[in-house]
Length: 263
Image (cartoon, rainbow, N blue to C red; front, side):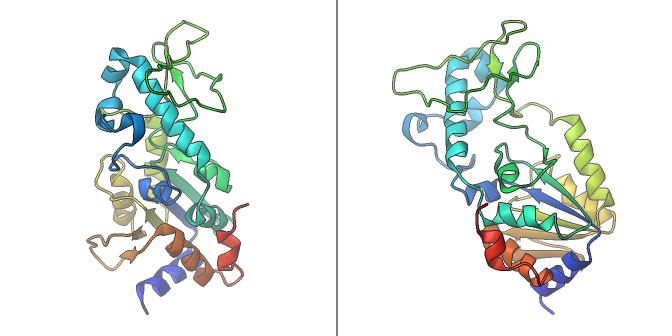
């Protein structure tokens, strides 16, 4: 029995499935990752230098404009077959917990609910000063043209600048989300780690906690990963190809077309 068959059988028998997704899943919808070179107005910037509180204090308009560009890319993108397959999985297992490191809303637009966002969301900005959520975000973000700056909105409560609702370098992950993810990893019997290298902590602890608790852990990634032990597997390939195939093998009633067709 090969790894795909073993994992399909484990999926069919799973009581509590955790799906842990990273940038590779969104990249298959055309959303640039932090490893990708920036283009257009942003090609002269290092994304690692824009994604900090210090950069926002220094030049709020620059950082806000970059995140509005990122939000534009997200709103133009569509959920891919991996997103759709994950949403479909929730209909076949008794319990599914979806944990993502991505800051877009493609999981939700594919039909997933109660997604745990470890790194926040581009669609949930908040005040930089008082941390109050900001509800006035435009549905049609404007990417700044050459020589034009877009100042961030102001908080209606304290007047402070509104910042993107994401976790920046040097900031802690939101504790409630992290604890939810850790608890799910320790309680599950199967964890699918999809499109993530699993080297950035503390999020990288999630598959490790599942393994330590006795669960089977499956890595789905275009690049092979080093695995250890009989309860750990690596399925090499694009998530949008592997997940629909896995779903079809595990559940005879789910066809590949069902999970590849946008809703």
